[in-house]
Image 1 (spheres, rainbow, N blue to C red):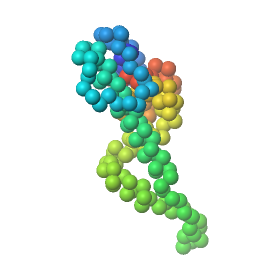
Image 2: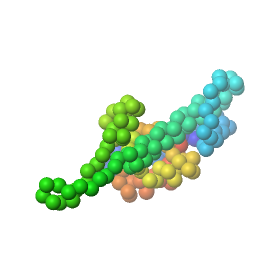
Image 3: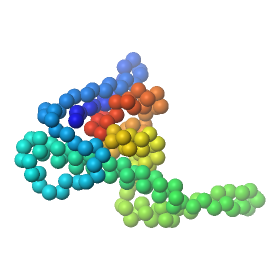
Image 4: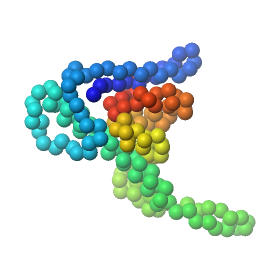
Amino acid sequence: GSNATLTTYKENGHDVMHYENTSPIDGSTVVNLMTTTMKTGLVENKTYAGYLAQIKTNLMIHGKAMFLVCRDLYDAKVNLIKVEKSINQEGVEQEVHKTEEYDQLIRDLKISESTETKYLAIGSFKPFLTLFNKGLLPNKWTTLYYLTTLTQSQIESVYNHLRDDISVA
């Protein structure tokens, strides 16, 4: 595996994105990007490579789990909010959104409004599912949220560089 960093800055009033790819100290460490099995036991191989592999695996699984939480929360919002049509006093048809179940879910999960907004942005962002299925989805939800704020042209410029271990610097 390797580490990657995405840096953005202003240059002459324009957003500039810089992608940097660096190799790890131990180039022999291999982590299966598609694994979903957490390493719950103590590290058996008590070497740098052993600790690196186990910690990277669990960080990667954490990142996948957070993406799935975001995806499922967005799906819940789409499916739990019921839209009913009614006629108002002026005789005009209007939509009424019944949000009780979704609101209860948010309360039970103890998700703040700010976190909910970020999770929904991530969960509704279509390109992430493709990256997830390829094992290339960045592991940090803050990086995922940042990517949802980019313009289409900015996303296209970094899309082929995205990987599980990229972070926003």
